[in-house]
Length: 65
Image (cartoon, rainbow, N blue to C red; front, side, top):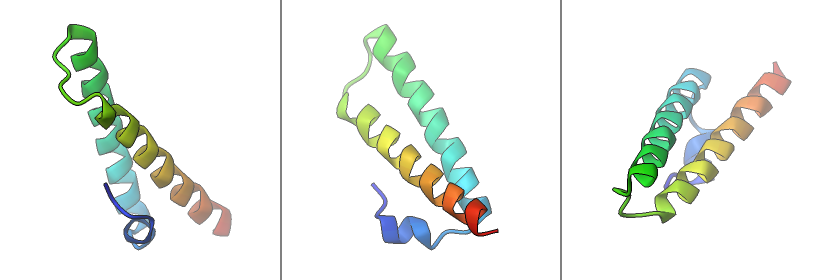
């Protein structure tokens, strides 16, 4: 899990790439959960929180521009 400070130091393009990766991972986790193959159910919560953190930083950057 990335710290807020590490996330805040990323550029806008890096944040967008990270957001895309997190959304893809969330999709895969939901798919695994639906098929009963999910081993670590806590990972869903972690990915959701990281996604929200990245979106918060992206929105803050957009507001500054």
